[in-house]
Length: 106
Image (tube, rainbow, N blue to C red):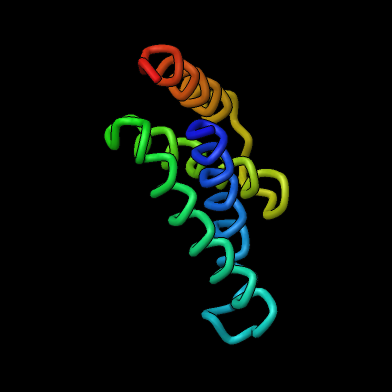
C-alpha cells in the first residue's frame, strides 16, 4: 500500500505544479483552492508512504514523479519545447524512478 500512496502523492504533486500557473499568483479562487487541496494531499500521502518506504527513496521517487509530470504538463498544456534531449532526460528520470522501486526492499 505504501507504494500506492507514494505514486498518488507524486500525482498530486503533478496536479499542484500544473495548477500553479492557473492560480495567477493565488488570485484565482478555484485554481487556488484546488492547488491547496493537491498540496496537502500530496504531503499527507508522502507521509503515509514514508512509514514503510525509506525516506530517501520515498522523497526521491515523489519528487521525480513531480518533476517528470510537471515537465510533461508544461509540454502538453503550456506548449513548452519538447526537444529530443529534453525527452531523453525525462525517459531517463522515469527509468530512475523504476530503478529505485526495484532496488527498495519493501
